[in-house]
Image 1 (cartoon, one colour):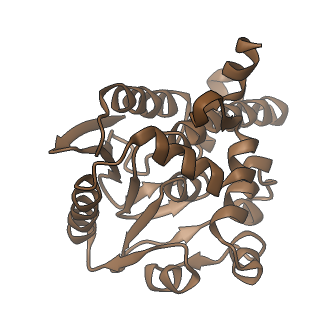
Image 2 (tube, helix red, strand yellow; image 1 turned 45 degrees about the vertical axis):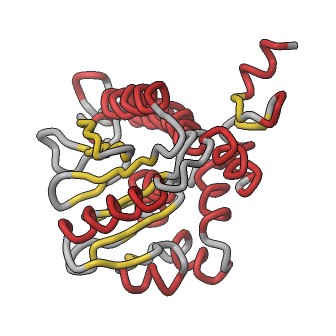
Length: 252
């Protein structure tokens, strides 16, 4: 579901697989989390992460086909809702993984990023996007699905202007790269997928030269994004290091 490469001190996580929409289901989420655990374990001062994808999509969000699969009873609306809720619950720790990762993180959005795929992109510190194809789209309003609380906390943290946040969440706007730059959601727009990935890797290399202490960097991220970090169970523990809520409780 994903591959991991390394260029100098820059880790490059690539969403792959036969489904070019890179829909997020339990298997995909577990694969990404496993890669992030390896990155965390192998990190050193000056590490950085770039996340990109193969194909026309960055990620098209949760795998609704998995939720409604007849073979798992998903043809029953109540079962489909429970399976969707299961994916929502599994995705929250992935958000926490990215927000607590001890290094700068960069999303190279090389295609459409919708719903949870949009959320996955903006979990990163920097977002670069191709402008020849693709859009950001929070599709829940059009699908008749409520936004999970931690999604809205993330969007409040990342889309500060309330009118732009309304455009994304309550009008279901399909936001192009250039428009996303204007709205402050995306840092820069690039010609195509290859240019976007190269720009992201260059930014990662530039940041890696600073040799920052990753734990200090992560603690500053958590302090900068208190609402969403609190929503996914992150806080600062002893010595100012980032820790999950369950870790803090275990120490009591």
